[in-house]
Structure formats: structure tokens, C-alpha cells
Amino acid sequence: MNISGRGLLRQEGGGDLYLTLKDDSVSWKRSKTGPVTTQLISALAPNGVIAIDKGTLYVQGELSTRLTVASLRTSGSTGGTVVIKDNITYKTDPRVDPLAHGMLGVVGYGSINIDTTAAHNNFTVQASMYSQTDGIQVVNYNTRPRGNLYVLGGWIGTKIYATSNGTTAGLPVNVTYDERFRVDAPPYFPGTNGYEILAWYE
Image (tube, one colour):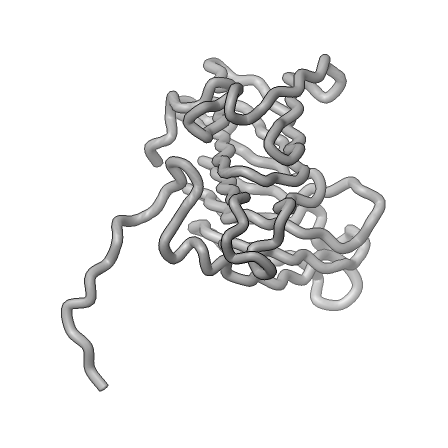
């Protein structure tokens, strides 16, 4: 995962970061009750990556540009976690406009947790989520109010977790692949090189 050192908000030695995406800007703070700073994404992170090290990244909001957010763990045994606190959506839905510019990658060295505390049961995540050593989890999946989780993008991890108890609680998941990711990706988002067809059989 070659993201280390690329984000202007990268922080050594631990510490959390709270991000609220706002179109082509982002509001951020270092703690839950800390002071909030709002900046254009192009000014804050010209390379399109916001990353922290050895902490927890909290993210939510609406995006109209290209961005990768990441929680890394370059050493030690803690941090590298992402928490999605509420809906993450694109300002323009690419299923309506395939030329929509907004494209988000959410990267965690550890788990990516859907830990929504908002007062609604259905949630949307429009992004490709990548967990390098863990997976995507719905926190309190077997006790939280039942709703639905709609994902437009991707769901990439090494582990698979239940997201509901199957009947009365949790978030059954509906994942729709964002077709743009076939040929494109957010800045520095982990991936493979292009593929070449060597043979075709019918």
C-alpha cells in the first residue's frame, strides 16, 4: 500500500482525524470537540490524498472531486482504522452522469467500520473501500436498528463480517460496482496495473 507520506495532514505517532467532505472542500479537526478548519481539497492536499498514521480516521459528507483518504499503520500495533460516521455521497451520481468528477477511495491498514450514529436507519457509502489487513464491519450489527447499507463503489478486504443478524437488526448490504473503476481510480488508490488479453476462447 504505497500511500505513506503523501497526504498533507499525515501525522506521525498517532492521533485521530475527523473529516467532513463538503463538495470540493473538507472540514477537519483533530479531536471530537476540537476546533474545525475548512479548506479547499486542492489547497490542503494537492496530490489528492489525506492520510494519517497510527490513528483513527473518521469520515462523512459529500464530494465533487477526486480524493483518497487513508489511515495507515507504518509501525506498531495500533491505529490504521477508518470509521464512517454518516453518509458519504457524490455531489453528482455517476450512474446518472458517467462523466461525474467525484471519485473517492477509503483506505485502512486495519478495519473500516460503519459506525453511524445519525438518526436514520438507511445509509449510503459512495466510495471504494479497501482494508489491507482486515475488512469492512458494521458496528453493533446484531443490536443496532435495522436498516440498509447502499454502497456504490467497491468492497475490498481480507476478511468478511456479518452486517446484520438476518432478521431484526443491522444493515443488510447492497453493493453496486462503480463502473468507472474499470479504467480509473482515485489518487494513489491501491490497485493493479492494467490487464492484457492473451487469448480469447468461445
